[in-house]
Length: 256
View 1: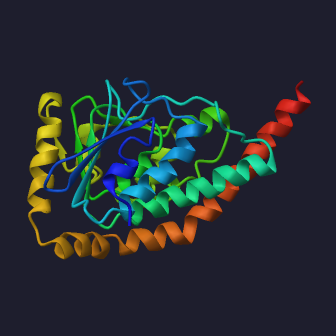
View 2 (view 1 turned 135 degrees about the vertical axis):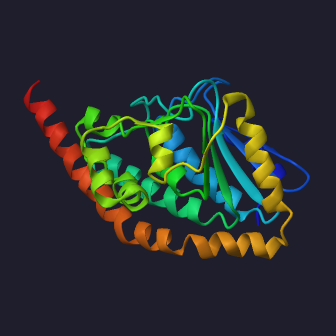
View 3 (view 1 turned 90 degrees about the vertical axis):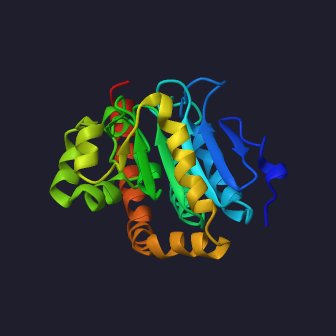
């Protein structure tokens, strides 16, 4: 069982703070500014979510971002998409990060301080989603890199907003504003930026006041279907992503 003191400062791209009632706030960042996601954070977040899930003193978890975005910037640094060994690492981490989020057995709240243009599957695996008027959703980087969106967005968006809407969202790189996302069931509340974290903590405090096993087991009960979806499709989707990445690599090599 993890202890907060052992992992609180262990993750360069996640600032962690926890109140006495067990509400853990996790803020993604790069150097204190908005997060630039790369291969190093891809690896790091596997261990981050594992540590959170192993700490039985956590009673509720809030995920949020720094600056003006939850997650809207990606760098190829640290990724190797174009070799079998490199993509094997991406595939293993991609599967594990989703299962580790689901293995956090306390309710989770996403407090979206701005755009979510990549890894929105993290958000869709939480239980309550708060957005600001500035929040938009898009699956931006996969098609920009020329690869299949197989990391979980392919599974969760059609599940959350409906099959036809979800496939359209992925295939057209649709920009989904907060109001539409709320109407379609991907957002619970739209909150002014200055009230976002206060509202997240208000909800989390109410959850943390439940008997410990009640909060924990409610999260488990509510995520059983999501676990089946991820277990059944994440590996296959990531394998398809890897095949498409290999083809992109082949074309790049052929073009010099």
